[in-house]
Image (cartoon, rainbow, N blue to C red; front, side, top):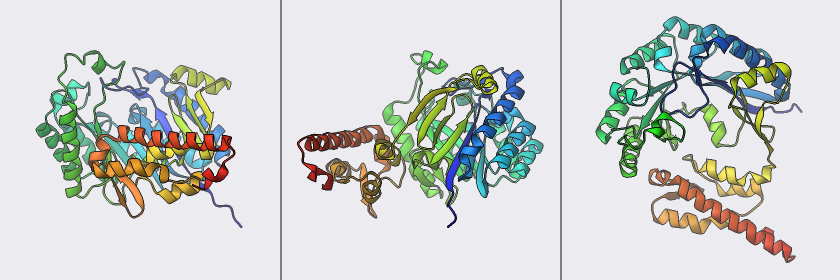
Length: 403
């Protein structure tokens, strides 16, 4: 009988950007254009080296993220995609995503070349429809450039368009956020990612946090709940805390992260979960280029995780999605009863944070607002259950495995 191939996603990190945004803590480098050719060569070399490990997989999603991948230009990007198509089993209907900033995606001819090569999903970093807000977070594009980029993408026959937005920006009110989201929906995207601003340590925005006026938690919560309702009324299905899509346009690649699917990352700072091993590459462009060339060490993390020890991840990631947790899946996958979670989940149901539907437990929009606390409570319940089981086994009572 022919072996069924496993599904695999590929992530390619492009760390170059025109300017580092004030809130960004991703690994990205401005003013490094002179290293692009050497970097593409290093990526291509590593893609070829890893390919034999994926011989029993089919690649059904490829994601070029950054940084600003479109800064590489269409020729380099097409070269990388062709290398993937040559060495991996890429399905005919694979989702192939390219991230872009509006100021770098307004050239119709470039986008057309990318679309013809196989890129079929474009994710634009819109962030806001207000030029003042964009300047306040160090973005270099304008609202007009967003419209130009969307028009160029449509002309190039991209039929799967995603827009990223951020709420909770300095000085932002519910009314200005509503205008931003309305402007985004008016551009007719197939997918929207709406993230609450996080002021990360080490960023320019963090350093001036005392002088900025940020919406408080209550204001951000109001923005979020309005977003969920507004997008629902306009035909967008919420499938994860921050992600909304028209039917059939959920990000297949990102769903791999949230459902413990396999993915292999390439480039400095890229993470992988492939072959039961979680690993990540050092955030060092020069080290990556030199390491690939010389066969030197590249990894910052490397951990093999037995399948039965992935219960924590399964809970944390599953609760981020609208599908939530299915007790039967948990019990079959981890060989333990789901009962230990029920008292806590019942409390969440009573407070309106969670519901049980069709045999699944999932969070409500109100619950998503406090998802970190709920996940913490679930992990406490799991830890207490593990402790009780270990103590019972130490006493020689193995009946606990049946409970």
